[in-house]
Image (cartoon, rainbow, N blue to C red; front, side):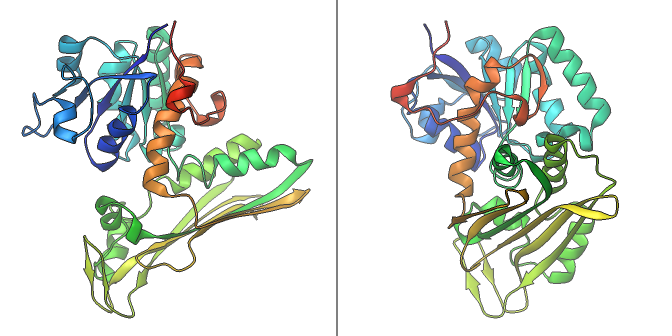
Length: 341
């Protein structure tokens, strides 16, 4: 039996933390990373991140460089963006080599929604090379899509799904605080959201995954977003927000069928949000009302979701996969290692 060889694509906050967690896992062997920052090129991953990784694991500017130096990993962890088409392009060299890819790209949770033709092409490629690709994460990827679907497994019938998520963004990384508009003029935020440059990515994909899992054909998906305005000064390690400026967002997305709202997602993510929580309401028989006090800790959980999906991904059939098509993803600690033959 041998450990699963992994490599990391992208060394932003999530990419770095994924490697730190991988260093604690006895079933994973980190063979290197890919990062375009020239300052990091050639450095040992462990030295750059301050974690105990093999000295042979180096940082390379391309997947080709990684493969030439360290050979092919079993899985490439991709944490370098939210756009499906761009993420496909970044993952392509690995998929062509038969290497499976787990990505935190939000649009890859249900890639056919916005990149149908490209998804079909990548799926055909994976089937030829034996690779697999899946998008995973916390939101999208768990709280507002996979978790509600799991809950419906005990229902005789379901008529509607409502999910509410309230997040105090002060606990989240700088790129996310920026993405939700922290410190921006509210009018500027609205303009940026309308052009796709701000807001929570993957909301529409969560609705699409929910509908797909339930076998519902939606007529329309509608998405709206408004800034949450500061009434007093709010300071984080990354932003100093004056009264009247944007603290974050209140974003909503609904899926309609036959003129009725079947799926409703409500996300409040802003600096200083009170009573953080995640709530799922299933209207059906039986009806369910599940409340997660404090909510799922986004950054920590995203890294865990990325690593925990590895065994499930490798057990799946080749192709572009949805999370709902994989074997159940569970936490595997170092003592419960999943090794390859």
